[in-house]
Amino acid sequence: LSTVRDMYKWHEALLTDGILSAEAKAKFYAPHVREGEGAQSFYAYGWAIFPTPRETNLIAHNGGNGVFFADFWRYLEEDITIIVMCNSSNRYAEGIASQIAGIILVPDFEPSYPEGSGIELDGAVVEKIANDFKAAIAQSEESEWENFINTHFSDELKGYVSMSEHLGFFRQFHNDLKDAEMLTIDVSNNVAQLVYETADGGVLITLELDETEAGKVKVGGIMVD
Image (cartoon, rainbow, N blue to C red; front, side):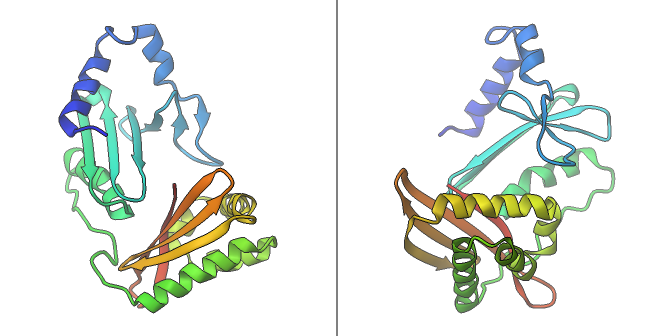
């Protein structure tokens, strides 16, 4: 928990050698491990590193808990810092920093808002998708997971990673929750939240949904807390 002002003070402190030496920061920001198969971004020590078309690096990290969301983007070589804190945790909030970066860095950039935002979805449709998700991860067959992905994921979400990586996420869902007790499914506007109780505590899965131009409701993002 913090404020935008205090996070900016932390950014300024990290620009000096008072907290971390120049040698330590070289390791801190180095792109050590690719974030996924075919990904253009890398993990550093606690940061994600994104090479830019301008041959600079974006050093970034975000976080949320299903209630609020924060984003922290640092273009150190270009002296640009973007900090977003939002009392909403959905993928519309997650797009704010990229829109600001586009306004600053891309000539003739036209800001846009994600498709489907602000549209109140049919609660029965949202609840059905949530129940289909619950049923899919209860199964051990990859074909069931792939069927849910192909039926209910938006094209954008499907395109984020390969199908094998999507199936890997669903395998993790299955392994972690196959013996868990389903407590509730809460539906509110564009969000469905599934609450499970496991031996290690509670798990909250949030499905973020959009309505496409064709009028179909699709899963645009999944968060786990």
